[in-house]
Length: 101
Image (tube, rainbow, N blue to C red):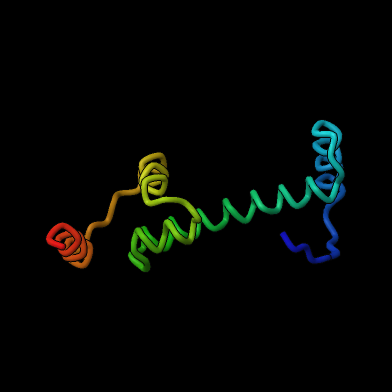
């Protein structure tokens, strides 16, 4: 993975918590901050995918791509969050086409 450098200002509380995590994991602060940022981005992208999917703005396939998970995992997330599955005519036509070949 190619890394870039960025400088940010964070509240002292976040810095102290990340330092505690780094000590617990026996890693340096930068590694921990990268991991926490990646987790935050993953969570944000999943929430955004769920929002856009539930609003009918994107398909389940696109939402699962946005969340960077399989459709099966996305279905699990929908179930966990009690978000109903949208199944429109386009989805049905696509599945019929795949079945027929």
